[in-house]
Length: 208
Image (tube, rainbow, N blue to C red):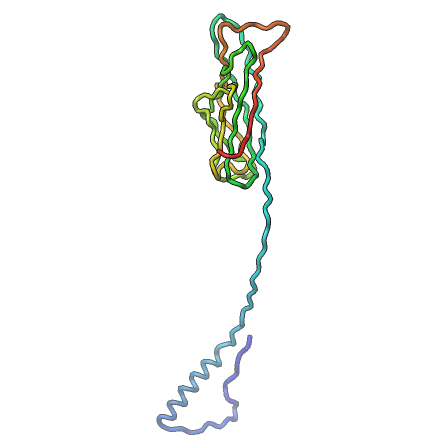
């Protein structure tokens, strides 16, 4: 640390002064002495710096592909019946970085001997859970009132509004009655180990 020495040497001669001049010289000496007690200030050095990064858009995809569970077997009893199964979870990954939102639809057609709109999904109590550190607004399921998943026309099952659903989301909380299969009293028993099938097409699209 730098400092300034201001005290006179031991043999310095001090002139004799009187009156106003004496007071003026004394004040100047006091000011100089205070300055001598203060160290010289260091000058700080600054330098501006910056960095940058680029972002490449990813894709919109199913992180967990929708896959219907095997439906419970039916024993004919001469009456119309409804049998229930738990819907399996599915997930969506929006890595586009666009914030445009997205939607999931399903369409299908039951076999020739089973009428369309026989299989319904109810999402009451279910929701989307964030995965892999995802934050932000969650997408929503659209079937709090049952949706016919085997409808001949596409039915919206889930959607994310603009700026929502970004990142990875997985459904959770489907109840044991979330899937309901309605069969009529005229349902025929199949021979030779044959089974009824419901073919479904799931579609994930940009926009809510």
